[in-house]
Length: 332
Image 1 (tube, rainbow, N blue to C red):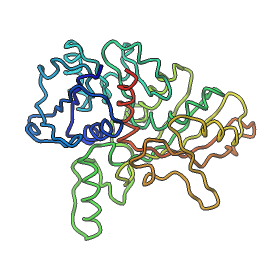
Image 2: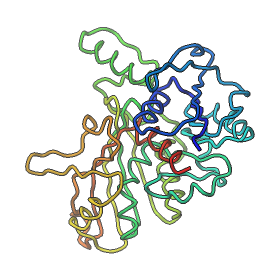
Image 3: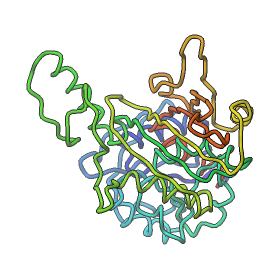
Image 4: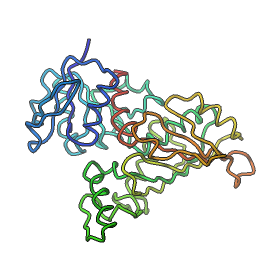
């Protein structure tokens, strides 16, 4: 039976991507309702050759709805996801609101699809950086357990939403023409600049984005022993995050073994041409479903053969957000 579906936060960057992916993947629908704030109510959004009228999100928005794809912000998810569940819907939530709730499964379909069956009305989508890292890391971990991950991220403006993407465009124009520019969506100018991720820094010196990567990885892998340390950085890229990943394995592993495992892994495409120095780039990862993986090499600082380095790029709006949620919906 095709479900009645609602998109919460339909006019944002991820909400727009939900519509595109549902159409591209021919997701079965009995009906589709698009929900947003009162500011967007009455606008129309194109879908399958027709126009959908945006409705204002409210407590009565979920009558008759079977499935909610949510990307409206954590506070709205906390308020409206339980209301949707009480109305009989299953919510796939793209915010951080429920990710670490022990009653809520946190799912990457290529990693822990079986966890979907444990839901109690809400399934959480992991953080984009966590997804992009773990799609290629998980198949390696299954073969040879990973003891430690050291990751540095190069995160696109898309991670801060549509307004930040436009701010990067506007800031670049202003920089090149010598015009003054004050950022609003981001704390620092994004164009021609790099700065540490704009999330709250704790007493331990780690920001919230970095904490998400280790906490979520442990939950998704069902492995509290895996050690993860992260440094998350914002770079002047529109969409698609990149990550430099160093892995420490339980047993020695060769570069060729890693290549063979990743070549057969779901959701991964190897881009590793040393002759032409062609490796994963966000400009090539954008609009793609797969995580691009390259710079696969033995960690020369580990003479015991247990270290591997990777560089990956993945579309933050697609696999890092909307696509992962739609794949969860397909499992349902």
